[in-house]
Structures are given as C-alpha cells and as structure tokens.
Length: 274
Image (cartoon, rainbow, N blue to C red; front, side, top):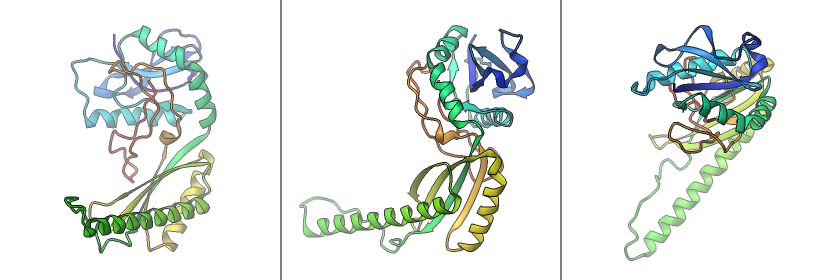
C-alpha cells in the first residue's frame, strides 16, 4: 500500500507510539484527499503519513492539506517536512529510506529543536527603474551593444549592493540565529522584492513580532510583510539518500514560502526529505 508522507519527527515526541509497532491514527487529523493521517513508527523516528490512492491526482488543494498537517504537527514537536507529493510505494520502501537516513534526520531535528522560521517580504524601490535592462541584438557587435552590456551590468551591481544593504540592515535589527535571503525584480520592474527567512527561537516569536511592528513603522520607505511562525523550511540541510515517488534521489532543498498571510495559501512551501 502506498504511503503519502508529510513530515518526520522523533518517536518520543509522539507518546501514543510507546506501546505500538504499527501505524496508529492521529485523532481528528485528515490529510490529502481527506484521508486519515497515521503516525508510522520507524526505529527512533516517527513518520506522519496517510494512505495514498495512485489514481487520485494531487492539486493545489492537496498542497494546502499537506501544509496544514505539517503545521499541526509542528505545534507539538520539532518536525522535518517532506516535499509536497512525496510518496513511498510500500512499507518496505518507507522503512528503508528512514533507516538509511536516520542519523541525518536526528541531527537535523536536534539542530532545529525549539526553533521556528519567520518570513519577511520587503519591497524596495529599484533605483534603476527609469532605465530598464536593455535587450539589444548582438549582430555586428557594435559599440551600442557593448555600451548596453556595461550599463546593464552596472545597474545589476547597484541592485545587488542595495539588496545586500537592506538584508544586512534587517539582520542587525532582528538578529536571527540563521537566515536565507533571495532577491528578484517585481513584474512591474520598478521594485525589488527581498524574501528573507529568519530562524529564531520559538519562545521569542512575540519579541520578533514586536520588533517587526516597530521596524515597519519607522522604515516607511520599504513595504514590509511578514508571515509565520512556520516549520523551519529553509533551514533543513540537504540530505542525499532517499526514495521519492519518481524513483530518483531527493534532497532537502529550499522552496518558495507561503504568501505573507496567516493562512496556508500555496503548497510550494514544503521541502523534500525523501
């Protein structure tokens, strides 16, 4: 029977497993396609799964259901999320994957114990917005073409410098344990969007929110949004061995974060473990 996987945590974090060696249901928790969610014991670890029907297509609603199960488990213990759509074909493939990765899983859980992720989205005016990046054909390689390359390169360096300055400013203000930063141009072309994931202690979430409120009020030149607390999606290190539903090795890789909202809106905010 195929198992759909949501996340993995320490067995001791699920006291209901103490006297069981087989999967047991999680009360009042439904997963993808409304299927009952189970806690599957695997050595010192517990995998949160549900039965999977291969004929059922996974869609955006499935992703929301996946993220809600992960969030529910994260309320009670440190868990490592699986990528949306990770499926084990049977009990043996699940146990084999967990067994081969157990040491890495436990190390990651220990590192992330008691921590959570907060996500900032910051819109910064693009100083080069009045002169968009030029696309000029290279036919002939004339002087105009090379001048355009120099201007575009200079504009790109200016954007990188400004983005780096803003991210350093946010680091000094929030002092996270760790961070992941990405930058891109908005579709309008006149804004840069910084996506910043901060790793903090869960006990300091209220302090973080207070700092965000103060910072957004003082720094009105930026449009700032936050979301969280989330499971620490961006801070789960890469692993190698594993089994994914495509039968190829999967790794722990960063994925897009949810929109800045208290709701779980998109399924992409899930990393791969299998």
